Image 1 (cartoon, rainbow, N blue to C red):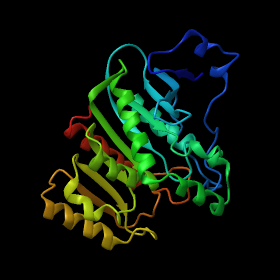
Image 2: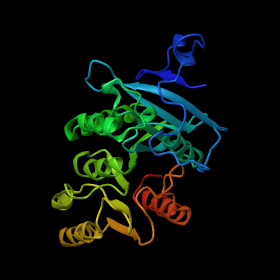
Image 3: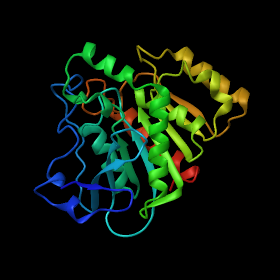
Image 4: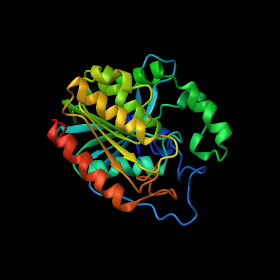
Length: 282
């Protein structure tokens, strides 16, 4: 059963089963617009984990909702922000959080599209989804990421100096920007995030980023991967690199989609964990 938490800790009435804690803020199920009929997504149990739903102050009229999975019990852990695709926070993103929590991380997935008031994962029409995503501009989203890192630094269960970020598709680009703009981010892993707007900013990277890309991606050309690799080398960003999976398609980690590539996903996941460990997010 999820519980809502506050920046100053959980209040007794937040745990009242008949009220707020009984109703999740997040969509139950997988993004309708991308769910494959024969999908067999990974389902990670919550055994040994604490699953919570937080409301994070971000300066907006309504605070930022976030799904949080972390190891149960006391102790401070490295934290990883999980940034969703264009479909918002649904069961795939929540499962990624639980996978990370099972490995000892605090994993948090903010709902960057909550201001629209639309249950985004329930939409099946891309023509409806894209305008909602477009409303979440770079400045707004980057501010929300800063709000999350500030919140994590105030939690007893999180190590303030060990915060990383990973994201998929739309979220992959958010990772690159966070590694440039947010000094609290120690390392990032971007899964097939568009590179066009961040290639010119490669020299401004504060934190090392591992980019995981698909050779058969119809939206991100291999030339962009090459250009970013060259820009990183020119800027002397030796801690950052890109890995291209030649036979994979966009969304190859998303195990609920037809584009899922188990081999590439497994390899990318291992590289992600190694990248975080190597740069102090552990």
